[in-house]
Image 1 (spheres, rainbow, N blue to C red):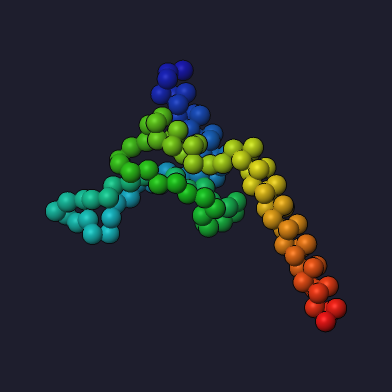
Image 2: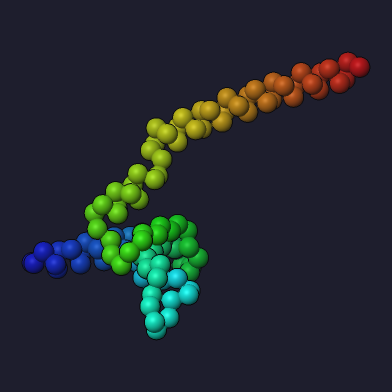
Amino acid sequence: MSKMNNLLTELKTLLGRYNATIEVGYDDCSDTHGMSGEHMNIYITKDDSFKTEESHTINGWGIDEHDIDVVKSTEPTKEELIKQIQDTTEELALIEEKYARLSAAYWNL
């Protein structure tokens, strides 16, 4: 199998697995005298639906490996998500504690 056949086979598999599409777009003000704002959109749609679940826009007419690195770096890591959850849980505990003190003070008036 040629490199191109391997690439197309893997790409087809990934697009199917993630219910994804790759589209070309441009600014609304583009016309027959020139195009501007050219970009590529990667969409992941919900299963059995046309509703977009996630999307990413890359400026230009193509996507290469460096553009994909940008996509990866914008998403939080598992460790970052766990830290956000822990921070939020701590904040909620403080709020609940303040609420309990205020509630007790109110009822003791």
